[in-house]
Image (cartoon, rainbow, N blue to C red; front, side, top):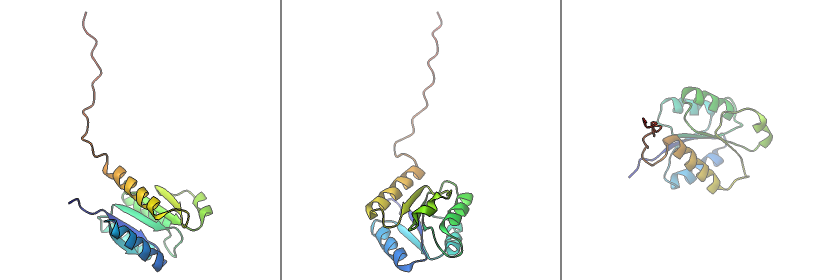
Length: 139
């Protein structure tokens, strides 16, 4: 059995956090739920996180700043930013994916997570040996 991937799920709205946690756990992910950016950063520093899923607007350390700090520690860790405020996405962010709350189906979120985790892990196929350019034949 393959090891479960661990998702750090962050939202200051407890009900949204709980719904996402249950949805992800029923799909076989291990979920670490945090209700603040500061708490999430502390959890991330302990290691073992494969993907970060965070709300944008939170008191203290918001989603954009959280992702910034996570990418400083681990640039290859994928991050998804969720927000009810679509216009705020005009800001530069280091998130790999932005999804406006209520504008996507849960299946879309799950597919984005799956694709980001596959990209992080790399393709399943065995690595090919690089082809060497053909040598000109001596005449």
